[in-house]
Image (cartoon, rainbow, N blue to C red; front, side, top):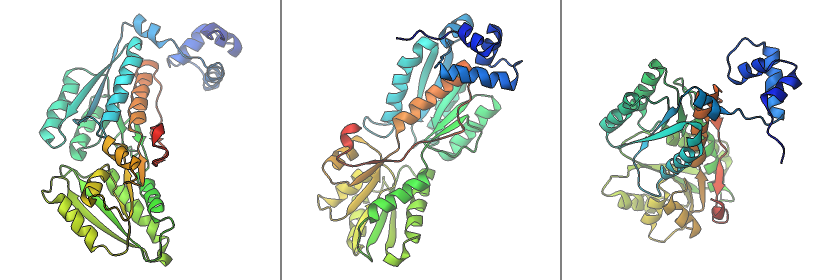
Length: 345
């Protein structure tokens, strides 16, 4: 096993002093651009990792990272980001990083306000969040900006409010991908249905983009005379299943249904085991994975929520401890998951 490279070795290879290398590592300036580039190139070639732990101890400084997410049940979408945060808590604890989780009721805007206020009151150094409640999140992020509190967004690649980074997928392309999956090898004149099952009357910008992308895909294959219809319905509607069933009965020559969020399992429940068309949905919830395994769902597009959260924490740690700026946009690949691929997730 090769010996870990040292600052002294890097300085020798770059023909500079140890102090110059140290200034580059800790971003303290007073080093020319050419020398900085050379030192960073050598560090990358040697796979040099600064001993941030020792530096933080020397500075007697720990970092507190807040994670602001919705309350949820086990197996639901937000379980994976929380699992990633728990792993990151263990991984970065020895580097002087404490991670605090703040959960709010997404059906109650006051809950978001009161919970998010604690992040400021408890003197956190950075924040990881998802923009679920749109307006309330904007106000919170604006306050972060005013207080110079760095934050990273997950679940979106639209970075419009001075976030350090936005980590997610291209929702528009995800919708186009769903269109390709659902229409493959379908007959001319086939109808397709979008069922958007909303939650707590909260507009989901990603879902809107997926629907937009889905419809866009079909505008380019007009010669096949495909017809797109849609149903938008609240998950809290007492006649939810009945209305879905009625919509399916009314649809003629139905070749597939696209569910642009994690609610595919509700559609399958409405079918009562009479699946006669292709289903494309989103997210590897426990319920969805079970139905995919039973071939009651054909395709699921995975957003990689675990990776989004873990990378977000890692970027915040590097920003706080190493003064390394993360990429402004981190666009993750669109994962197509089928029954045969499910064993890998």
